[in-house]
Image (cartoon, rainbow, N blue to C red; front, side):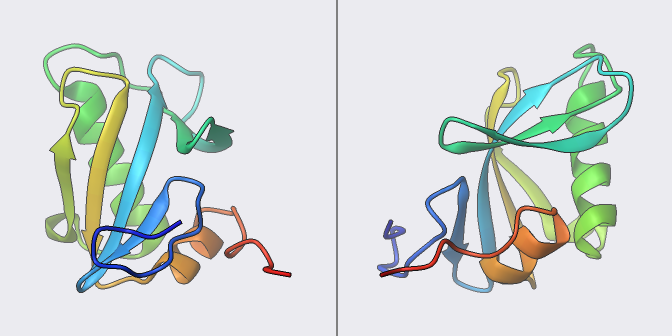
Length: 112
């Protein structure tokens, strides 16, 4: 799958952007614990312990991604979906392959 800049992403909710990675994320709030839960269609599914009230789930998502990806919170930007379960998040300073590895999703699928 090609991103807007013509580079190939993983086709699973993770795509390259200049200087970082764009994620399409499906959030499940009020989970028993925050964790990556695989995929939900073309998005990365993340379960969050925080409730979807007063931006708590969005803050928890930013904190979770920053910690999991080893990036400062200032490198994680919610670009779309502030009031939706489906969100677009951009993280600077990490490439898609490394991001997928750190999220426990492996790298891009093999091409054959």
